[in-house]
Image (cartoon, rainbow, N blue to C red; front, side, top):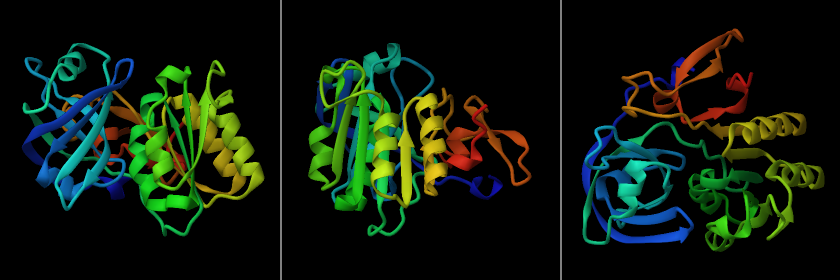
Length: 265
């Protein structure tokens, strides 16, 4: 893990809001003009947004970026006062951003067979990965119910095979993403998995990937304070080269880890 602990280069930027909409109950899509951050962004990274009048910034995963046009896309869920304030912003206003932050998803050759597994609000950071692999990707996403499902059209437009799962069976596969993943891996091999969502889902996906002989990357979600590794508020359990458990900063060393690095206990 120490090899990933390098000084992060990030920018504080005033980003103009170009578009804002609610795409599902409590889920908002925001498009920003953030030329410096967008030009440096990578799949799986995040930004920290100042949500006035609250002191702590809110970490939001990057759901898309256009380096040439300087466009940044973020998708977030309202979970408290800060994100409620953010959801009230409108086109023409500006936001104070710090980013891009963290280590993102390592991308292999686009000819590799990739399986992406996203649960709920963990789905958006997988969209740039799907666009990279195109028709060599299978995207499995899971939501509580059909009305909560997001980004299905975006994933389909990437060229990837899409599998929608709902807990209540109101759309797509009636069951969990890990059940659909098990079926997918039994049908044909995968070279690499990318997973983001609830910890239990990621743990089971990691187990299935290991059994299938596939590399697996997971994006860990922890409550963050500073977002740059200074406050130690977002640590998670990982394993060092000797197999010993250690506490690792998600914002600085992650949020993406190889699944075998994570201590899932």
